[in-house]
Figure 1 (cartoon, rainbow, N blue to C red):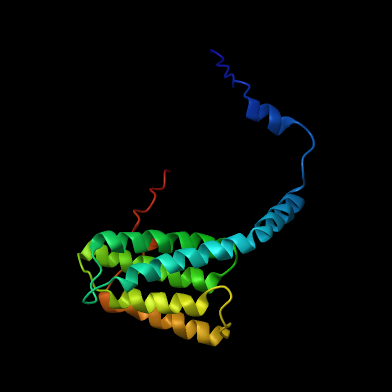
Figure 2 (figure 1 turned 45 degrees about the vertical axis):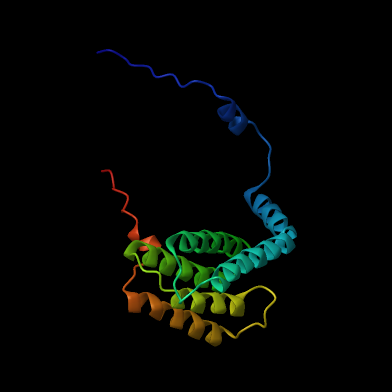
Length: 170
């Protein structure tokens, strides 16, 4: 019987991981949260800028129709707001903007240029934006529930449900 020996190359990462020291996980997470919190003002400003860009696109809409190129711009800006709002803990805004992404993506894929559902989402994002008058949790759920009805009306699936499932290797 032959013995097979396997050798793993020694990489810089392996050396670093094997070294003693470093931060405990809880301390590292706490430090990361403090760093994110220190950037909140910049994040809020970035969210406002992206909202203003969406509003600028909507001001130029004619006959309640949004051409595909502008719909893609709205989708891009909304996606940025999803990332920023989730990073800074604005979950209702993140949910609103995910819904906007779902609707914009659905309209693009269906070849529709209907601007009304996008405008409703834009008004809703203003209600949920950082610095706006805080809605109560039931009020937030009413707003988000009404936005969900738009997806149902158009029979669009959320983007997160459209991805091909990852095959399980057994």
